[in-house]
Length: 366
Image (spheres, rainbow, N blue to C red):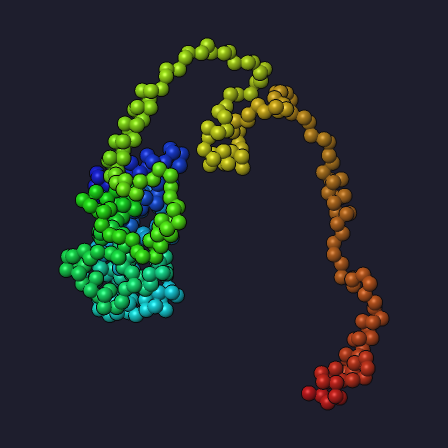
């Protein structure tokens, strides 16, 4: 698949967020980005991420298969996840999942024929105090019951977007993947809908009751869009640069001669940790060696001659000091005791005259 120019531009923006020698840290948001275009991480998506980051496909695939949020096969517009872990299961989560599976005619990680709903059971959705819980593209529906869950998926299939119990208004899985890649949701009022759950408000109410607050915090401060925040940051930076006094020119001081013949090298902090670690573990001829205090500068000269050694004499000495193993008995083994034991075994009696096959000590052979 050929990805759109919008996706490629966003990929370059994501990579630019990280230092040049740490660009592979952009892999996680890049996987969300390709999922936002295809609805899952396809082999073409893996190849795209490997290409823009200079990795091989095995490295990208290892990450894409580790995290469950990256889907490896086509997924519906709405990913419906039902928690069936211990707490939600006790409160009825498994019944919710079973009802949806029967109603939709699909099982775990399967998609309805119309491509609208993909169903999955989740091990934990981190909302035990709201259980049983169900999420649609990671937005919560709390204290859900089987019939309420059916009503939600039917509204989704009809083209509606039911309001989650908590959080912003619903969006498709592709729209959610754009946000997970680090881009703001530009839909009008996307972050203004929804509300918090009652348990989430408990801490705020306790803080209000006891007069606990953050100095200088105005709860009515509006949440700015990304474009507004970027514009405000640019204006603040321009003002700071304009107010900064011009630096006075200082005469350059000549560098002190050290008398060292070692080549000039960059300070270790100028290198990435990966390069520095590699050079430490496996230095080679191209690895620069800093002229540290106490380090002796090597002086070219003839190689020392090896000490004379008679190969035959060395071999003979080695053979003499390592005699071959023999068939003799181990040291301390008494020959008399071995012969006595052998005779007793041949006569069929033990040392006390009892039959050795009598394990019970009763004198009866079993």
